[in-house]
Image 1 (tube, rainbow, N blue to C red):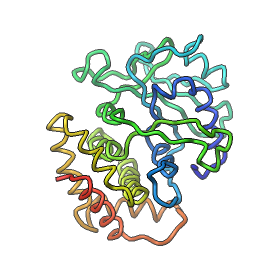
Image 2 (tube, rainbow, N blue to C red):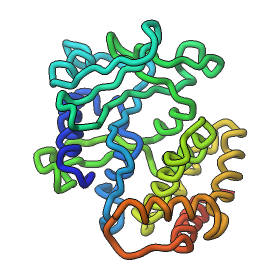
Image 3 (cartoon, rainbow, N blue to C red):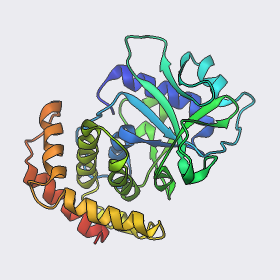
Image 4 (cartoon, rainbow, N blue to C red):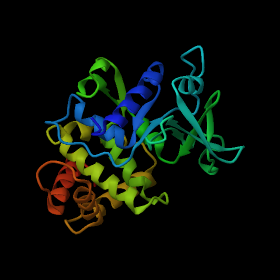
Length: 282
């Protein structure tokens, strides 16, 4: 699925620990993009690009307890090392494998809007369950709107996970959130990867763009300023083959060694524009 056997094992080990919570949490980020290929509405599989070795999971601000022991304890018992950063009062906690040679992390994120202080207060972390710290992020709630499911066992790398349903953001919400988070002091490298992920969404679901249109319509009750900024920015990003979205996505492709036929900035722009037209984005 992700092109790296060591990371695939890490992801599978994490899913095993998280299994009692898979109806409560959502796999987001680059891992979600890779999982899209195994959704029932995906077109013929294309090589996945994973621009990170992190596994991110969106969790509610208050995560119900589904097991006798809290999730933080289960993570540690499964040999994930708790990596605590930041201050003692607002620690940022990530989980990593014991093998230091595997430079990968598992992180839990929650919506800023539901965190203590709401949108008025930036905070580094929130205790969403006893001992489990999550980083609040603006716009994350978009990814929780009508999530889709992917049977992890459909990925050839996970034959033992048949029937295990992992929730992922619906692709329309994924694209909208990627555009909105560009102004959150993100590095240019991250912005470029997000543009390539948006292009991949347009390719993976090219035969079922109507489904993305239906999901985009369900997002029309988001705050008006969000929708206005998304519409303005996404069209500018992919206005033509010279626009930042198309050129940065091409840079990612050319620097990644992704297998497959050669693509151009013009091909990227046209694929994403077709998706946006189908979604009805102004």
